Length: 430
Image (cartoon, rainbow, N blue to C red):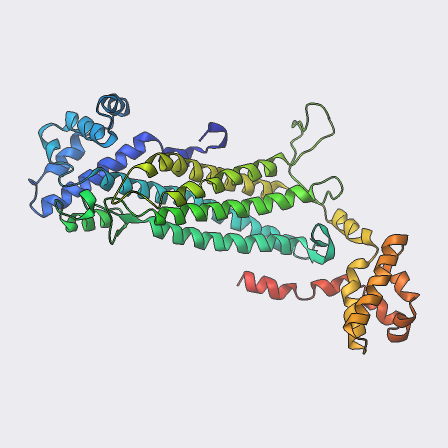
């Protein structure tokens, strides 16, 4: 992943030094198990741990000749370890190391992503409470619908990220497996107890059946969850972008006093951070298709999945980590304009109360079809003539017959639409 969209902590997980260190730890853990089973001499694992060093450049040099990364790694380790090195990797195959290591890296990355989500949840909860009663217009199809509150918008995002937290936990569990089963997964040359020992050592579960590789449906699920989280990020970012439009100006990204919005137009303040998140979300989602295609491999194993995972493993997790962190900062620092929200709500001259008038007519004996028609006629008259909806209704004979002016005024009370938001907040924040 390019530096522009990378954060240091998660990037380290995917650096080769960390990967090779995990490989070494797996080999040492397997050796420890084999010692306990008296399959190799005692003391091998401790001597390997003491003498072995990770030399990335040396591994690359060996690989350039042998064209096999695990063999190059083992050769490099043996050069440092000496005689004891020959007892490493006994009965194992490359995928035992590669797949278990990849899952460990995914788990490591997910711990950071999980913390990111926790921070998002904290910000969204605080902001949703702050703006709980900040009334704004709700829109469907981009058109004024009925009043809501800005807090409810944020609370909806909060609940979605709560679900994302659970999804991530499930996805991590899905890939938290270990396979040390040897060629074609039959354990012909490695005791299943070695796998059990290694799995426990790394807080993983034993893969019930591996065909030399851990089944890739697990990983497809994992990357699908990352894509869903990215979709949630974009949902929030899209709302901010829309609310920052000149015509609306209800919300605005923080704009530093030294910041420039356009090379040509000095007046511009663009929602570039939210737009950036929209683009990054597309990238994370794009990794799902190759992950799904990785499920189908030839027979017991091929390496068509390998090149894919070398890309999408680091890229998806690093990009998502960056995106979550950026979203948190946007939410923390955004400007919210309640007065503009109220002003926008009123530009439709009271049309937002049409449903309440219609329902009141039905309560007073008018059929729904007739009530709808009467209210719609007055709504269109109000819109066409740019007069208040209330004024139009007061001149309608059917309305005058069924509803008094005093009762009609009550139907234009904005607080009517927020009377039950406490119920929603209790459901979400219970």
